[in-house]
Amino acid sequence: MKLRILGNTLRLRLSRVEVEQIGLGQPVIETTTFPGGGQLQYLIRTSGLETNIVKSCDGLDTLIEVVVEKTVADRWASSNEVGLYGAGPLLIGSLELLVEKDFACINPREGVEDLDSFPNPSSIPRN
Image 1 (cartoon, one colour):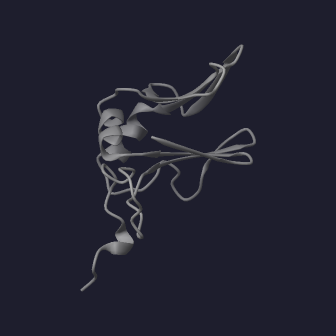
Image 2 (cartoon, rainbow, N blue to C red; image 1 turned 180 degrees about the vertical axis):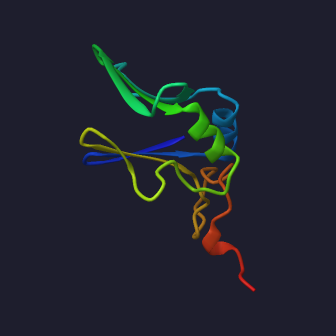
């Protein structure tokens, strides 16, 4: 799972396996460890409740938890829909939340970043 933050916009991009996990009701979590031992964890999980964001801090550690309504997550995981934002981003207070399927880069780069990505629609030949 990739996390992008720009101002008051939080964007999570999930690989194929991670989208499958969400569709099965399993959480997906990533951890970034900083020098000195502090951690940033970001988590996405489903719940019977409406979509929301929970943030907690404990000393040097921070957890950003994105809770997505299970029926919405199930529909998204089994569809061709790119994201969980419908016609626009989800607005939670003044924060915009986008949860998207991660597409392979059009111009591949070295590394394994795109190994489990969805095929990029722009790279599929059209008849």
